[in-house]
Length: 293
Image (cartoon, rainbow, N blue to C red; front, side, top):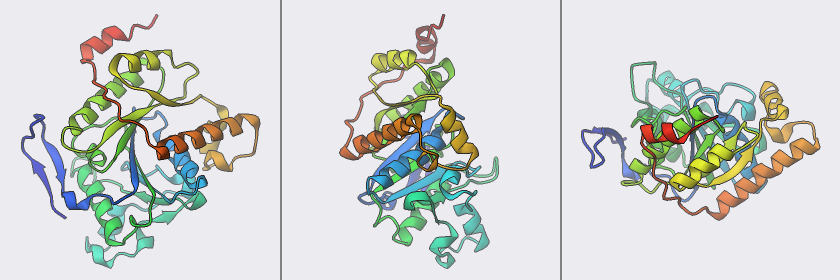
């Protein structure tokens, strides 16, 4: 794989540059970002199942070294791509599909990229190796939807690398200062990547929030749109404890409503969402803008 660190791009940043031949074929590709602990993995996994329920062939790629993106789909912490490569001394031709891909609930294919030990490498390399392996084993040819679930709100060259593969980036946020502040930084990263890659902002997913007034106010100011709203429901908390997606929980009116919200979001994303020309605020301006009583 041809991967290099470009010293200085027109945007003024040092970035991990992936080989353009490692692009993901015809699948619709979504990258999900947001503040750490905001519920990206819960959102990603339930969205993956919703796509599968609509008849799509889905691949979810966890991009966090703690490799817990897909555990509600597989009921375990799946081995990572880095673990698998280390086991064969990085001779990728010796790997079998089952060494790094697990099949989860509803047939969702699950991959955990993992990451290098702290301070020893770049997360962009890991994402690049993961995509390379999937292509080598021809797994992307039979995939309709790919979802990258990305570590926290890290927007360095490494963990921004899924944006080089994605068609649309989605941001998960709550209705509070820290979440929206993190969202603004992610908007800035996506805005920068869009100068050189096809990725565009696809919308905002409000999560763990009763109200969305501050999210909506920010969206209106910068040119974003809320595409879904998942409230802070006990059934979501219990699903994580049971290592299950929401589509496996005991039926209830409350559960049916949130399942339908996920199905509607998947249907909307599959149909295609228009790119949003959002421009981030400066940190100081955002600090003044988010005036909570």
